[in-house]
Image (cartoon, rainbow, N blue to C red; front, side, top):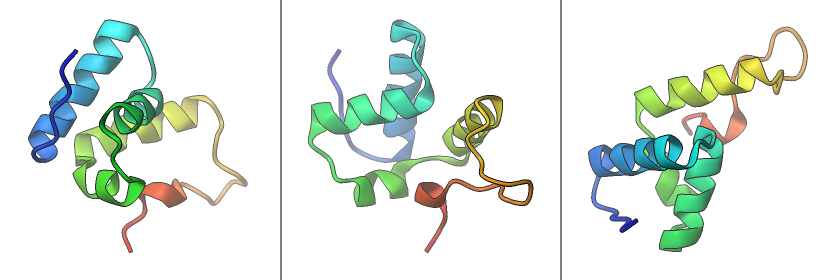
Length: 80
C-alpha cells in the first residue's frame, strides 16, 4: 500500500483503507501509518478527523480504556 500524507482527507482515507484491508483497529492503523511514513504524533494529531476520533472513541469505550466513571476522553486526542 502506498501511503500519502497530504491533508486530513487523504489521511482519513489511508487510515480507513488500513483498517478495512488489515482488519485492525483505528489506533493500530494510525500507529502503523506513523511507522510507515515516519510522521511525528504531533503532526498526526492535526490530521485525525472528527470521524476517526469518533471511531477511536467508540473502540476505546468497547475496550473499557477509560479510567473512572467521569473520564470520557483520550488524552492524546484532546485539543490543546
